[in-house]
View (cartoon, rainbow, N blue to C red):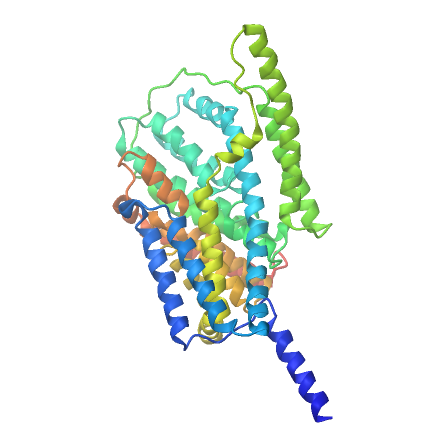
Length: 463
């Protein structure tokens, strides 16, 4: 009988050790301390990317490799330990793989639309009209808010910044305020759609909220943008820029790519909500649709080249995929692997007990949002998902909202802000953004208050 009980206990331990969410309790071990230091150093290198001129993916990839190597060496002394570490790593890698294929397809679509002149045509349509600076301030902000849920906040900010720079030439004041407005609007717009930001996608893929649940964040996200926009509009200079007569035409196949992108979103949502398939399934199906459109574009270009007697440049969707932001994709892997390794060592369980067990869900989720202004919201959200506190839908939507819009508090708090500092020719800077952080903070607080009121009143069925 004792032997049987011992075997059962051993089997129970092995099962727990092989769990994808296993905790190896290394927070008090030197290896755990070294791993935490490696992650901090790697992230410091990411923040100093511009100064040290090292791509942001390199330090986190190296840190991830060292963290998992130390974990495997410490735990994998016997067969059972090695198997447990392998199980945890594979679980983390599967989460990343789903995100990776989703992003590859999304980036490919955005790049393909840009190559076909979709965004340039949008810019030309706006610049041809004789709007005032204040009208342009609101038009570009509104477009950013409603384009971001479909394109993502970074792409939206870059597209609309081209319009702002084209129209505001010679008026640095307008460009500065319009750029701040774009960052806030794009980040807020991305918070109420499963496709609008990496963090919302992560929450959706983790089954913490369904696709339609994110729409309940529309009103809080809108308030998050409108409050600072209303305060800033009084500082926008009067007058209007010179109208431009420059035209831009959408290339053959551009409309077809837009239609296939809309179908891809529909397939992804249907596949996730009703077929219970990962979001990557729908996106990869959409890649097949994009390839069909690309084949038609290639044939059209070949026939045109033959008729004109010029060299055929060819058109391949795989060339477009090759131009994806691979540094960003690898950076995401490094972050996933680093945070996953620290979670396996027990750091996230320790943090979860302090944050969500001591100060409460609302304050913890709000604090995480403020922290995302300094630390990228992706490791913040991944850490919360790995902590997996027992929160209701309302609180999961709260952390989704705060992590999505908290980055607007500082210019370096979001990818959109960092990108616009790079293209603004010195007119949108950290200091200029900081001057309006108080207004952005008011919008941040108002959006949280509105969401908590909705939650308490159960107006949208959240709880």
